[in-house]
Image (cartoon, rainbow, N blue to C red; front, side, top):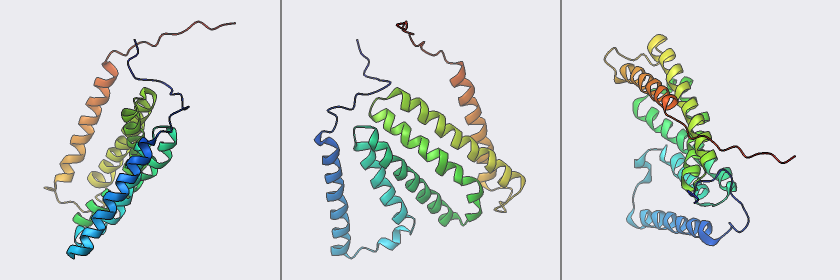
Length: 199
């Protein structure tokens, strides 16, 4: 009995109308949004300029996730990168902490690359991509925390005050990430059944 999870997926016959239909619906939704904003006189600049980086990134990410074969990763990964850049810029725009780019790059790459691969693997039930995405995302978050502790708590690149939440948040994230890694490695893993090779 198959669990539905696969290590590899046969790509023949996978190019159905599902992905194209999702892209069409996204285009309709985007068109309605901008048409409505024009008719109602809404000021899109009020959303903040990083929204104009996040929106196309989300569009590419969703479009890539909708494509049912591995070619979708070629669209989803750039979408994830663009979305993460926009989110980091939005946070920096709100706080003025632009010097945090010295460690936030790790959330963009490899962090967002791993997150896009993880989402694609979960959506299309690809265990190999889920494992790879988890490892890549964890690497990105680990680099972010390590460099964040160095540059914020030791070197003080953003001149955070002693009562600033970020001075406590980064060590807490480090502890949580460390505990998660230890627990993950202690969990029993299903053994892969090795098939005898034919000589």
